[in-house]
Length: 396
Image (cartoon, rainbow, N blue to C red; front, side):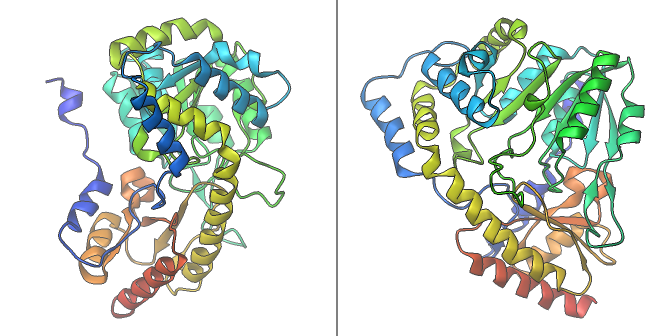
């Protein structure tokens, strides 16, 4: 076995979840998914495809109907170029994580340097390491004062200093899991211009693009690198059907890339999965076609969940956090609880509360906890805060 694979760190989120196995009554907020099931009309489209006998291989890059549907969807969020501009730049992948891994395979050789903004979803850091690349982490900073105390923000000077001509790839996840940090267009333009000068590729994980809580409700999506980039820029943007369409278990995503890279990406799909299952692609196409019945209501509900949970946490003694601008997580710090993995395990055992440890996302978040607020019943969020407060009293 390769040394790097043998020494990959197991998921600390799973480690906490395993602590809850067999324990009744645990309120589970540790995984990054809604507890709402996929809309019935999406599932019915998959069933219809299976009944029609669509159980064979498809094009490596995905069904043309789905790619055209994704192109129209993309142009609706990032207008000005037309759907035909996007179709040649798309590859359908077996989940967002598969798309990110394909991008790493396409771009990285052993020994390459990668810069990543952290804390971040651990899979994003593991993938370049599996490829033999070295990863330089640039941590976000935490505001300690003012209305936004507890918010994580980008140190642009530190990031630009870390990206040099030796940097093959920059990894960014915004809106960010776990912090809720979001880039604005000016920051994206600055980063893109710098990477053009250094010849660095950008891999932007934008799977939370639609889970964005702007005060201007006309914004249907968070700022994207697709809004500021040219078609031939060294940019790959990863998306997924998981979050915005309630399809986490379906494992389907897509990549947007320069058209010159699409053929090679198709070869990589062939050597990884051959293709995404046709019946899942049919379900995804229906999800896109009827997305207005799913995503706006989902985002409004998630915002209501955020607006229920965050004020309650802020009012809890010993808790520090800021309202997230995007994503589905409240990321908070508990005073005098610097070992988040141990704290998360104790919360499961002693309070029946399941949260993800911040240390799963990077050492700079070792004293933080992530709470997924994507809950059908906001009463569960209230009950969870009550359990946290009850646990904190004897530990205060």
